[in-house]
Length: 320
Image 1: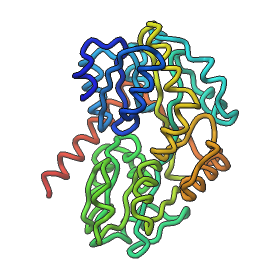
Image 2: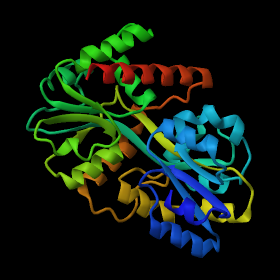
Image 3: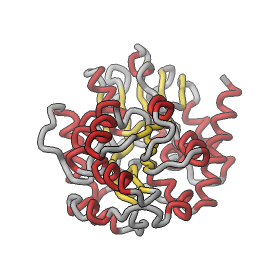
Image 4: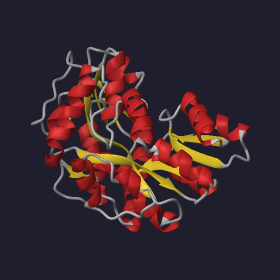
């Protein structure tokens, strides 16, 4: 909210995930586009939707899986970003073009989910089953990302019945005997001596690993989807066009995504010093065909997932 308060009447208003864009980038964009820019951040999908409904943004960076929740409101409102999209890595462009999105939407980042774990307490490989992973973490601390689509998909892999009651019951069975958290902030838990694993996004996991080198990460093809964050323009202001196209360009994305450990739609940046990050990046490019794109659900279906996930979290909180 810092920049939003300073530039209450800014010409370009941006909202993005917490930690994606920093002060230096905002200052650089302001100078290059000769624009006043406000910048707002969110910490979860629920937080984004609340802020999005409350404020008028020029540019939004948002999770791809909620596209259908806002597609009617953003449909061709802003600047056409086809020239940006046409510069993507051919394999990424092919993935993107399998689905139809309005022309003012482009990819900001790509990622997958997986398990960051402490090898002193548990080993996780690509052939592991969900039940075994949780069972091997008994009496240890674990975390699951606060995302209704990603986490409910994980839970569904260990149950044959997909109704709401069975999904919640199955989650309770999975976490039984563990010390669990539902959170997108894993900074503290991975440092705990009893930490076993966290089901998290690759960027978050690699960031934690850079701070805690003993930790490891693995994705499991049958559990992991390709996920993305999109960038969309919501007006046709010239300042918005300048800022959006610079934000979505390879020149700006490479350092941002290298810093946050996510994958670029343009392919692997030339200069990556972190070997674990480079290894995961190369694995993604080489094996993305083994993964499915995280589904973009219909509005009513997504709302059902949100409601179920909120119920699960409330019920879990009541048991603590």
